[in-house]
Amino acid sequence: MKYHFRVMAALLFVAAIYPASIDLVAEDVEREQLQPGDSMPSFVLKDYQGNRFDTSKLDHDKSTIVVFFGVECPLVKFYVPKLAELVSKNRDAVQIIGLNSNRQDSITEIAKFASELKVNCPLLKDPANRVADAFGASRTPEVFLFNSDSELVYQGAIDDQFTYGKQKFKASQNYLADAVEAIKNQRVPKIQKTETDGCIIGRVFPQDKENKSTVTYSNQISRILNQRCVSCHRDGEAAPFSLTDYEEVVGWAGMIDEVVKDQRMPPWHANPKHGKFKNDPTLTTVQKKLISDWVKSGAPRGNIHDLPSPPEFTEGWRIGTPDVVFQVTKKPYPVPATGVLPYEYFQVKTNFKEDKWVQAAEIRIGNRAVVHHVVVIVSNRGVRPVHGEIDSEWLTAAAPGSKPLVLADGLAKVIPAGATLVFQVHYTPIGTPQTDLSTVGFKFVDKSKVQKIVGTKQVSPTERKLIIDAGDERHEVSASRVVRQDALMLAMFPHMHWRGKSFKYTAKYPDGRSEILLDVPNYDFNWQNGYLLKQPKLLPRGTEIVCDAVFDNSAKNFANPDPTQVVRWGDQTSDEMMIGYFDMVLSQQDLLDRLSDQQD
Image 1 (cartoon, one colour):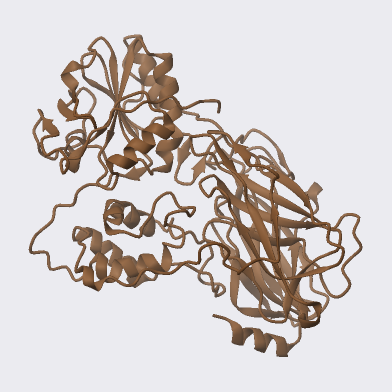
Image 2 (cartoon, rainbow, N blue to C red; image 1 turned 180 degrees about the horizontal axis):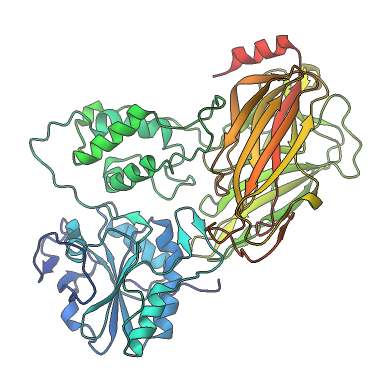
């Protein structure tokens, strides 16, 4: 996409700041969603300078787009440039108004949003979401298109390019643009109503002063969020909004309930029937019910004296001061405002004169807003093999919610002398031009203290065997690898691209038994999860590790860039891969016992 944000702000203060800042001419009551042919509700709001915005002053020779937005909703940021492009192309026929009805979005945040995205249409604050109620709006971004007679002709999504955590290369349905074109030509749009994907508007809950709910934010909900969510949902981390304060959390209450019920959050894709993992963030049935009950009861704050102490997070390096730090690039890397970007690969020479034994490694992402994940790969081309047991192609990685690599005492990964580090970086634009300067730090251990080398190995087919026919809804690929010495498996990291549908690891033991080690029935490329076993798995010599993957190259796959194309192996996300990475050490039973004792 080549859209560029053009926007300017006319912002409104909330009623708490200017008590008289809203005057609904329409009935000030909640109503059903507007239907095609309904008249546009009239309203008067003020901007941050005290200027009134009155819908009666709109240009009635033009159609009007009313879009409900939220400053932290990821989909909104993707669609701002599209709306700007649409209005620019139809400036003689269309005008646009932005309405913010989220209780959690402050005037300061809206001002920052407007400034960063350079918005050139009025952005209005809707105190107590009364205008949203009059429209029947429920999500952001949700649009209402009215003709010059102020009659609703289209309501719903802008197009079908983006949904929750997924996106197409381009839209296949341009609902709003098609509706604008229709009324310009005095036609009724073919599609007048669509479902809207996006963030639930953070409405003001009706509060019962006598609410006796035993489930409150201060008591139960804050503890759940602290345990499962705030490692990402806090300032400076990858999540788009913070969940560390009641006033912010309550505005997202409905959305939290929805994503928990749909199991979109916390992001975890392992089938619970197979394997136990120490980094599993899944909420318990009890925790899910507490969240649901809390939202149903109006999301009460509760007694602030019940609040737990906030969790502590280490600032700076979580592994301690590194022995050496490498920058991914020499200078900040430019990330464009929009588009679907292929992986970037950056090579950095270590210039190590001797083998280095890595006990801990941490990737410090420079700009968490645009970096989805970073993988550090050791390139051994032209370098002598490491003496000893096994080496490691994949050194460490960072993705939303991931932790630094910290190996147990006596274990280490190896960077051979003279090796080159290859950084695979996945950038995700957020609507404004950005830059990133990420780094990786290593802590080394003396070779004399290393008992076993940790290797990251892989199971994958030969590249020529990965050919997916156009439109193939269920293309199955299988690959295997035999363990030649007794080993311990520590973790698994499945990897595919946009057409990946499912991934499974199975151990076939020498005695004829089979065991599913990891089953990912709904693979999601957007979350590059690693699965760290609670207890290392003993793999006797002769065990066969089998990886089975399924790909969906059909039009049913929302993220499929082009179902008409045959897909082959390739580095870019428009190509495909099928790799079952896993961490292992060559080991005997005594090491298994010792490592089990060190588990959290």
